[in-house]
Image (cartoon, rainbow, N blue to C red):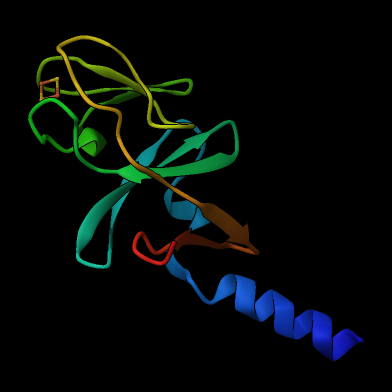
Length: 118
Ligand code: FES
């Protein structure tokens, strides 16, 4: 029974890739990482880490260069705003939502689910 549970847990985790240590992205901060050849920005909101594509939906500027306030990231170029929890566009220049990725933190390590494994 125990071995079965361990195998299930392994299956659930194998699509996740270790991208950072939690100490690298403390509360209120962002950090960009490479995942399968694309930039992903990690954002720590009150101890919960979120991951979204590191690209503004307006003109492809890295959101990791912007400002994180609470759960809202603001693009550094024309100040479009997005909710880091779900990637939703909240205002500013017309923009698409930003794709988000599943995150797990196990021990000190941040894992993000690879984008093309859905
Ligand atoms: S590039 Fe982000 S708001 Fe224009």
